[in-house]
Image (tube, rainbow, N blue to C red; front, side):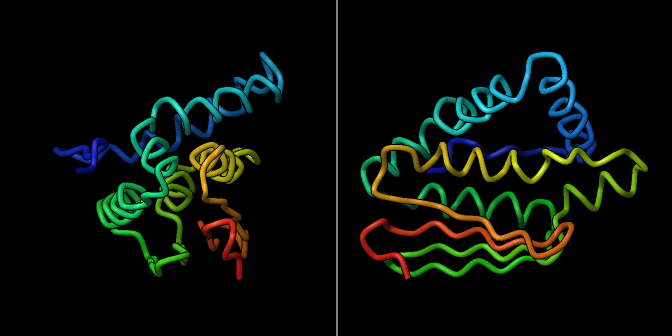
Amino acid sequence: MLRYRETGELHKDFHGSTSLALDFVAGRHGEEALTEILHNVGTRVYASIHQKLLQDDPSELIEHLAYFYNREEADFDLEVTEHEITLRVHQCPAIAHIRKLGLPLSPRFCRSTTDVNAALCAGTPWATETQILAEGQCVQRFYRKERKA
């Protein structure tokens, strides 16, 4: 059961605040502090996803990705096999909303995703890699370490 299932009105302005906060934290406290925060998001905020991955159970990660990308009406594809989860984001809803608001996009914005994904997989049988194709377009892969393709 997905622990992080937000319901009610969707407040996309959160993405703009996150973008600004990434730069504020890095500017005020340094890149190492930001790295530590993003690691804690992956291991503590999303603790139940991390715990399931520690047990080699990606079910909550899959449910999390599908739920939130669908909730934001994102243009994406999610492919799941026994050994790999591939999320292809054709248009990131967060970046699109930040651009719509006319706010600056943090150069750390996509890093926040890659760092949180890495933390989710830390110490687990799973690994991750993200390929940035263009602004708002990426491929996020999660794969069992012994079966990397």
